[in-house]
Image 1 (cartoon, rainbow, N blue to C red):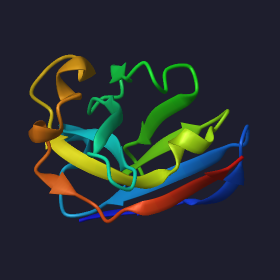
Image 2: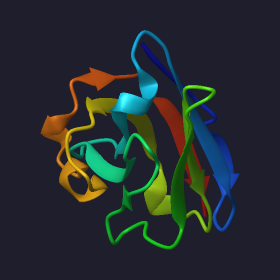
Image 3: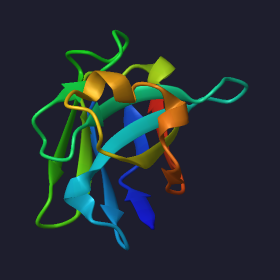
Length: 126
């Protein structure tokens, strides 16, 4: 089970930190990913981190603004979002996939993730 939280309303330029707590899986054996879905759009990749935390990947749209991290002792993954823009407004989801690749690059594909949490709404006002 994946439980995401931390969403809310923030002004453009502000920051938010999302958290996703996992239970029922061997957390450090799973790649954790964050995705988002804006109204009328497809769900898109936001970031991923391998089980050890040694590799991360981001799309160009958030690179340099968003940082994914994890605390394996707490079975929790985080998404620190800085310099938020109105176009970042979306429902954010965390997801888990068994860690079978060395690099997080291969986990940019949404189809690799069988386990999903409920979403948390992020709204960025202009």
